[in-house]
Amino acid sequence: MTHQDQKQDALAAQAEAAPREDVLGGPQIAIVLPPSPDGASFKAWQHHLTFACSVDLVEPEDAPAFHASTELYMLGRFMLSLSTSSHANRLARTGEDVARTGVDHVNISLHLEGAYEGSCGKRVFLARPGDVSFIDFGMPFAFETSPYRTLALTVPRSAMPDGLRNRAVHGLVPNVDLPATRLLAQLMREVYAALPGMTLAQGEAAAAAIVEMALAASQSGYGMREERSPADLDLIGQAQWHIERSLADPTLSVGSLLAWLRVSRGALYSAFAEHGGVHAYIGERRLQRCYEAINGDDRADETLGAIAFSFGFRSEAHFSRSFKSRFGITPRGLRNIARQRGVDMLPPTTTGVAPDGIQTLGR
Image (tube, rainbow, N blue to C red; front, side, top):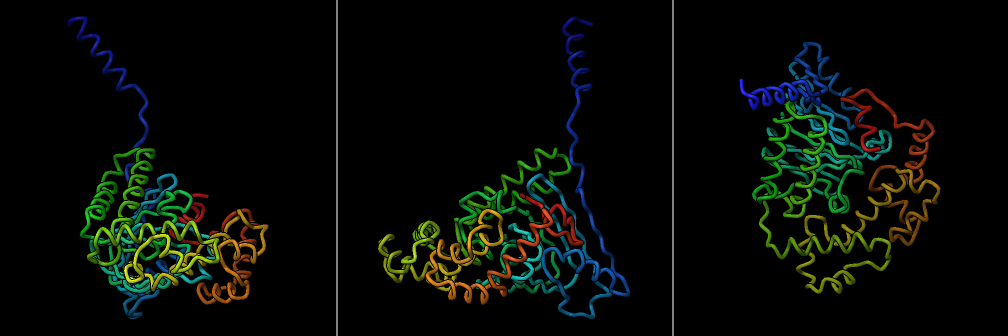
């Protein structure tokens, strides 16, 4: 054996002896619920989801045949899960649920099989196989699903890039025909398939890459396979940017927005048609920002009126009525629940799919 061969053998032995960071190997949490004659599996499924929403079968007599599963990877700030349900469900999250659970994240979901149809706030929601959707768990929603298989990345609000956090993405289903959406769907599939061979650090980096790709997809097109011109897409992006930075201005209006954008009233109305109009969009963003502020810790010492005025409301009474109508809970009721959570120093824990991990995600 030559000296060179001996040197190579020594280097190979050192490489084999060097400590290796463990790969994930598989999901940290796996739940399988088989059919049960007494419907116990569906009751367990309901129990698992109490941290997030209520769930009922569209056809209650399906309970004995119901089966479901969840595989979940905990990836630092993120979670990536694959869930299945054998029968049609009704899923609902109310304003009271949002306040009760303290869960404040966004799910970026790839719908592999089955459809979701319903509403996310005031936005009509429809997601079909192959679609990617955004669901904000800091906001109410109500869906009816067919049997489904869904891959979802759970992103805490604190881990969302500003460009995504500042957009009204709740219920958004980007155009599946556009390149950015197709790349996002492909990336989600490939990351999930590769996770068993990744380290935790690599898995978290891959999840962060999905979030960045989701930002690009959210900016590239709106609605179910709608055909929009690049000018329309640029217009709504510019309008949202200006609205987000002008919410504190009580004079923000269609007129001021038209003056800033220098476009026709018809073009602006067309761009915001799916949001219920420009005025409705501005009102929705003000209410959402108030909800986040009241439900968080950063402004706990401020009065409810001060928070409302800081986002452009001129009347505390009008704000309170609009808030209750939108979320099903008064601003004071939400603050009382948020403060009760603070007494315990931890968000409430309820039985669910990794509830502790989900409820403390990003905190």
